[in-house]
Length: 162
Image (cartoon, rainbow, N blue to C red):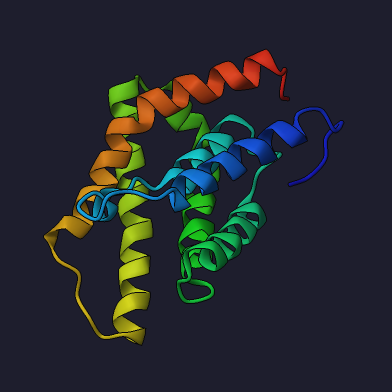
């Protein structure tokens, strides 16, 4: 994240940390496969809202931390988050003007891209194919997007993050 005045950097870090906590929060066994991609949703919001503050490098670092927290192969989440952040930054001006339902479709595509990259890494390292429930996670994230967008926008405006 590049510093452009210093205002709001702690707020961005705190929201990413909260997303990471939600990612490792204990859940019932039946609900674990349906855990939303909280970190990806938060990172994409910041990439769309403030592309000059949160970039591909931020996605890579957040992905490495997420790999350590979740115990996955080091670099698995960072690869997906880096690619998703690149796409989100390239398309941020287009995504911002869409209504929520169209934004959700765009976010669905980004979440599927991250899931495909993760599936590629899992297939290359473990050689196992996940079940059909694996593909429900991006759909859940897309359904959560309007709520996430409104919540993070309120946080950004309240703390005057620029």
